[in-house]
Amino acid sequence: MELPHIFSNLKSSRALISDYVALDNKIWQHQFEIKNYNRKRLFNLLSVVATVLFMWILNAGSDRIISFIPIIVVAPLAFVCIRFIIGDVLDYFKRKKLMRDIQPELLRLSERMNELVEELDSFTVLPEKYRTLHAVDAIGNYFVNKRIDTLKEGFNLYEDELFKSQQLRNQQFQINQNAQMMHQNHEMIKAQRVT
Image (cartoon, rainbow, N blue to C red; front, side, top):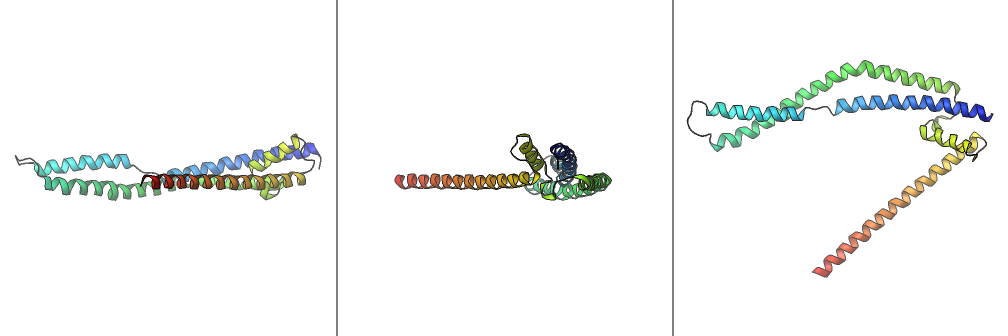
């Protein structure tokens, strides 16, 4: 395969992969927002207002100052009921409604992602394993920098660099663990000297 054709193919593949990643991120963001939806601040405020209101009602018609027993019992009970029972139930139903409302959008995004995959499958020279932004960019840079002459060399060089990168991460992890152990040993020695 000629070099201009490979560059063109990599460029087109990268554009489709980039679009796919953007759609995937959008779906993930919608799901994250729904999953983590809550109105804690609102229910905290409502629980405080309800507690004060309830204590005022208990004290209505009486000239005495509110005793500590209703405060100790009612305040936490009102807070817990409104915040954790009523609030969580209302949030649950709101999340279900949001999911129902967003479902058509998620289906549309998912269908577009499937279309992108089919389009990519129809022309790309990249095996499925190398259909990532990182892989496409790396292989394209190998060609530009004249480090490779064929796609096969590009795949092999990419795999080799991934392996070396993983080895470096493992070594850095070991170095960090050793430094942490040395620090702990040093602290133990200092503690033993003091006693």
